[in-house]
Image (cartoon, rainbow, N blue to C red; front, side, top):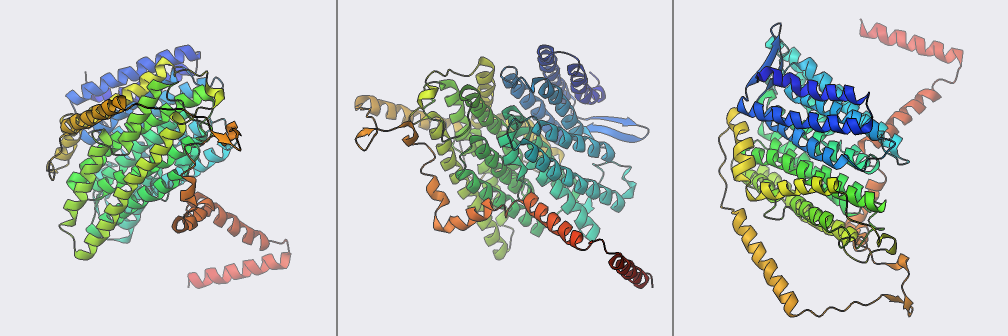
Amino acid sequence: MDASLILIYLVAVPLGIAALNSLVPPLLQKVFTFFGLAYTIVLIYYLFLEPAASLSYMDLTLFTVDRLGLFVLAFIQLLSFIILIFSLHGLDKANEKKFLLLYPLTVAVCNGVIISENILLFIIFWGLSGLALYLFALLGQTADTPKTAKKTFIIIGGSDVFLIFGLVAMRFLQPGTNWSLFGLHITLNCELAWAAFISLLIAAFAKAGGFPLHTWVPDFSKDAPVESAAFLPASLDKLLGIYLLARMMTILFEINVTMHLVIVTLGALTVIFAVMMAMIQHNGRKLLGYHAVSQVGYMIIGIGSGCVLAFAGGLFHLVNHTIYKSNLFLALGSVEKQTGSNDLDELGGLGKKMPLTFIMAIIGAFSISGIPPFNGFFSKWMIYQGLLEMARDLTPAQQIWLLICLILAVFGSALTLASFLKFLHAIFLGKRPAKYNRIREAGINQWLATGLLSALCILFGLFALQIPLQKLIYPVLVESGYPIPEFLGTYNPLLVLGLVTIAFLVGIIVYLATKNVRYDENYLGGMPALEKYRITGTGFYNEIRNMRPLQQFYNAAEKKYFDIYDLGSRFTFSLSGLFQKGHPGQLQLYVLYILIGVLVFMMLIR
């Protein structure tokens, strides 16, 4: 198959499916989307056989794909297909047709972003991906859905303005590139170059959900359909945002050490701020939304560090995150569809009723927490080693700076584990409310989707070096001119798996040998405790909110002092209020404004 035609098909096939889906009933929509996305996976296979592909028209290169683009494209197709399996049954009937229309359309524009070498095409597809995000946000059924959709649109749409300015500024700095995105390479040696770099950084952070442009992610995760949360902020938008950041770090700009440290710092702040917010959440989806932000911090640290080992770890963590976070969103979605709730205070004891979903959630929770031998451990381990390697060439002051960032990242990983112990306990362990005694396991399409994602968590953990690194990530490094990194020390995931298995079996044997379990009812005042006095999995974590060192931080967060959207809204309304007070309708005051304006104009043109 002609490689240039494959690039066209990656956009045209899902776009054609979207057009067909606008005309047919939901059943045919599912059939067309299923086979259409399966075909895009086949197209990616052919691209791996011929990775160097491009399409030109009138001396303009429109589409191209290299190893980095192919790496991202592969996971766009794979994750879209798996999440579609989950969505084949259980979608909200009111939004089913709209969802299945937007789904292939979003895949088409995301593919367009990755393969676009022409700057104008890149801007168009990037903007359309933001519009798709807004339309998915509107599919929510909560009271806050309109407000969340508006917030998402303003943050993502506003960052698109910065993207356009940054790319146009780069084109101005290097006018001979014939509108080729990959032909640009800017040294940060003037104000316009810095403005272009910061503008693209804003666009990448907003799309990926990096601090401080992250606040749309938890709100979107809470209010949009759970399938949309798994599909976009957990998967495709992460892939696009980090893809742009990786392009910036490799070919678009030449970065100095100080700027690398600044980006690493922003990544560390993203990790620690978001995980602290996740710790106190009672809504399961919002908890996962904050963790979707927190994990971006590790990607930013790795990609932005300038160290090859950490860069490879950042790319690896990108795909790991999309896998286990989609798994967690879909596992919670399965629970939500069976119980009608995602409130952690209302759930509990569902492990026996939904054992398959429970197992998948455990795998996802251990993966995101960095527990070996699951995939999340290996990528974080690479990033930590990369930072230590990076520190060897820094000044003492810079080493201290980097050490603080490393400590924050490691501490964030520990808090992630604590947060997901809360998540698992609140949903699957403890005492089950009586109203959930008759619920059943999720449908086959739902546990099949979470099962596939869980299998990838295990596969990419046990065979990290053999499959994702050697087959997908190392070719990206080689093509970019980087050496294959060397690891510090040794890590054998199969040995770790064996030791963990032995420890687990010993624990089972000890338990069976000494088994003496007694179940007692809870009593309050000599009477059986009412349902409302049931001990939930969130009770202990309420104390974290009230700890004296953290209380002021959480108070400020509740007042939205860290929400750039809310701060911008307050500033805008305050400024408009001042203008309103300055326009009371008095003619003589308007004449004075005109005179002052004329005087200022004359002074400027003097």
